[in-house]
View (cartoon, rainbow, N blue to C red):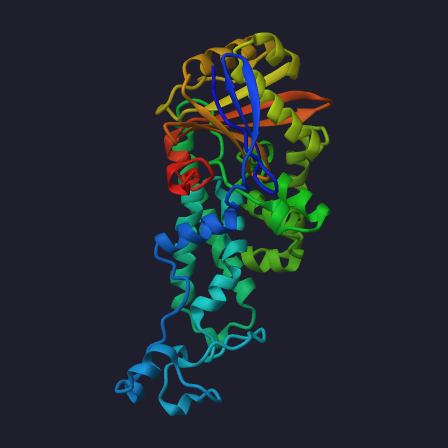
Amino acid sequence: MIGGRLCGPGGGTDRRTWRLGERTGERHGEPRPTGHRRDADRAGRARGVPRRAVGRGCAATAGTAAEGRGGRRGPCPGPGDGLCWTTCPTLRWDGRVTFCDTATDVFEEHRPVLLDVAYRMLGRVTDAEDVIQETWLRWSGADHGQVRDPRGYLVRVTTRLAIDRLRQVQARREAYVGPWLPEPLPTDLGATVPDTAERAVLADSVSFAVLVVLESLSPLERAVFVLREAFGFPYGEIATALDRSEAAVRQLAGRARRHVEERKPRYTVDPVQRRELTERFIAAASSGDLAPLLALLAPDVRLIGDGGGKAQAPLRVLATADHIGRFLAGAASRLPAAEVVLVEINGGPAGLVLVDGRPEMVFSLDVADGAVRCVYVVRNPDKLSALADLPGSPAAGG
C-alpha cells in the first residue's frame, strides 16, 4: 500500500496518514507556498540568467567604486557623460528601453510569460529553460535603443527558438521508450491569476490532456495555437513573430484549433470535483482495497504511463477499470514506505509520490461526471527534478 500524508497546495492544510487501510486526520500548519513562477525563477538563475544586473562603470567612472556598483543619484546622465547605461539608477519603465534601463530588469519583467510560452511549446521544463537562456543571450546583445516593444521582441525570439528546439526534439521523441508525457510543471494559478475565466484558460492550456494533443501539431501550428489560445496575442503580432502573413496565421490557427478540439477530452472539468476525486483516489490507492478504487474509475478509463525506459511504467496505454485498478493496487503494494503529497501540477491537483523524501512519481487525473476518465503517471526520473522543491521533499525542508 502507499502510506502517506495528504497536504493541500495552498490555504489551510489537512494532512492524513494511511496505514494498513486505516486513516487518521491531523491538522498541521500551512505549507510553504509553491508556484511555477518561483520555481522557474530559481531554475533560471541557476542556469545563468541573472536576477538583477550589477552596475558597472565605464572608463569615465572606473576610479569611483561606489558609482561603478550602484550608479549615480540625481538626473540620469546623457550618453555624452561617458557612463554605461547600466550605471544609471533603476527607474520606472515607461515602455521604452533607454540607456537608463538595465537589460536584466526588463528581461526579468517578461521572463515568466516567456517561460510559459516555451514550456507550452516544448512540454519540458529543461528544454524551456534552455530556450529562455538563449533568449537572454540574444536580448543582452541586442541594440536596445532600437527596441520599441520589449515584450513583443522577447516573445518573438522565444517563439522562434522554441520552434527550432521542437524540430530537434521531435526526432528524439520518435525513439522514446513507451508513451511520452510532458514534464510535470509546478503551478500556483489559484494564487497568481485572480480572474476565474483567465485561470481556467491557462489551466486548460497547460494540462496534460492538451499538451499531449499539441504533440501531434506541426511546430508552426503549435506556436500559433499557444500564442493565440493561451495568451490571446493578436493575429498581427503572431504573424510578425513567425514571419508569416496574417492570412496564413489565421489558417494555421483554424487548423490547429480544429485538431485540438477533435482530440482533447470533451468534458467540462469542475476544479472542486477534480480536487475531491483526487483526494479520494489517493486514499483508495493507499488503503490496499481494490473495491473503493474501482468505484472511482469510469468503465472506459485509460492510464498513460511515462517511464522513458528509465523507470517501471506501462509500455502502452492501459484500458478498462478492472485492468487499471489492479495495476494501481499492485504498484502501491511495491511502495510500502511511500508518502503522497497533494500538489498543484499543470494547473490542477495531482499526487506527488515521495520515497525517502525524493520524488518517485507524479499522477494527475482527468475527471468528469464524478469518475476518473484518465490517469497520467510520470515516473521518468529526468522529468521529476523540477519537483524537488515542492513541500515534503528534502530540498523544501519538508
